[in-house]
Image 1 (cartoon, rainbow, N blue to C red):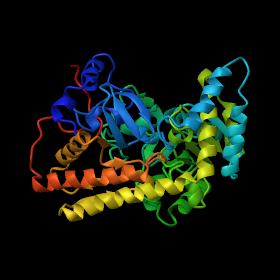
Image 2 (cartoon, one colour):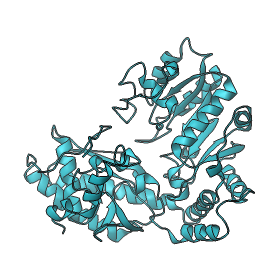
Image 3 (cartoon, rainbow, N blue to C red):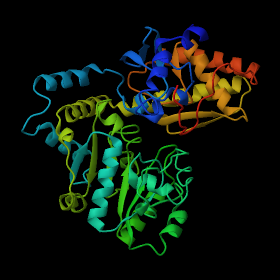
Image 4 (tube, rainbow, N blue to C red):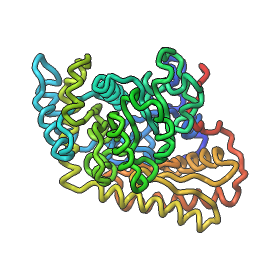
Amino acid sequence: MYSLEELKQSKGVALYSRAKSLIPGGTQLLSKRPEMFAPDVWPSYYSKAKGCRVWDLDGREFIDMSIMAVGACILGYADDEVDDAVVQALRSGVNSSLNCPEEVELAEALIELHPWFGMVRYARSGGEAMGLAVRIARAHTRRDVIMFSGYHGWNDWYLAANLADSAGLDGQLMPGLQPNGVPRGLLGTAIPFDANNIDSLREKVRGKEKQIAAIIIEPARGEDAPAGYLKALRELATEIGAVLIFDEITSGFRMCAGGIHRNYGVHPDMAVFAKSMANGYAMSVVMGIEKVMQSAQTTFISSTNWTDRIGPTAALATLRKYQRLGVEKHLIDTGSQVKQIWRGAAETHGMEINVTGLPSLAAFAFKSANTIALNTRFTIEMLKRGFLGFRQFKPSLAHQPTDIEKYQIAVNEVFALIAADPASSIDTPLAHTGFQRLTKE
């Protein structure tokens, strides 16, 4: 057990306080801000990560039962097989005046998994890849308007949805995103619609059929797509001549090798992958049918760092291990066990919770007017017991039965504490629930 005081006095908490005066927002990724978990308590920084374990700057060890690098490390931290391939690539030269052959090998492997696609383009982050996909779709259709549901990153094309209404994106996972810095000329070029609601989309499309360049969705995130929804989307996109794009940055490789749309039998014109495709190394890809992808040559899309050898090498090694071991089965089984642990603990201690998500993207929420305080308290109590614990869990291959057993014991203890005194206050700030600006400290 770690005490609350030693967690609050950790080197990581002190370093984050300094970071906020040097880095706008404190971190490079909103989802890694300590304020999203337990302000002034979350360890903030790691000295080492291996398997499903993380060591903070004070050498304290935690089992990561939270977001696992925001879903990027699907095999676990510092996987030997992937890292060995990367080290060999490093020693052979990360970049040169010539191109690395791994990018061709990776393209062939990805298209073999998704034979309805014919071509690929690479980037190194999900946001970049989504920007690239939108550019290609607009170039192909010579249209401007993007219809979308779900969260798709930080780019101007996406935040333009908030130019007309500052709350336009609030129903798309991340509330409070402001469009400052996005040109006003993009007003009306990004229009959100309700997820899994084809009628909502049809209504918003009416009268704009010849303006719409693309329809973009996350095919599944919280739950499986409803029967018939993806098929209806496919038919609508074809009918109006829009490019159908599946954002698989989160869903890719979590329920099967490659895109989750493989499980549904509905094929988009383009799909975007990042995060877990390279087990934590920077890599992303846009895949698409040839006639759409060739439109990339009618615009300008190019970057030196998209040609490095590390990303494709890591992606190839990750894909090989994933397919050889059938990693999706382990992810689904592990996530299902954790969802049942939450349900069982809640039932045992007379608490009401809502358990949601695909097994590999599991989440729970306390049914209480005091939800944010309970979330914060849960995270702090799990930290005390040696877990990065959160209301979300993204399983990896590295999570083993003994880890899950230890986690079950800890969850039961923490739920018992909360159930015994749900109104108990904590002497730390509450977790944030969305984008909030941080004051300089």
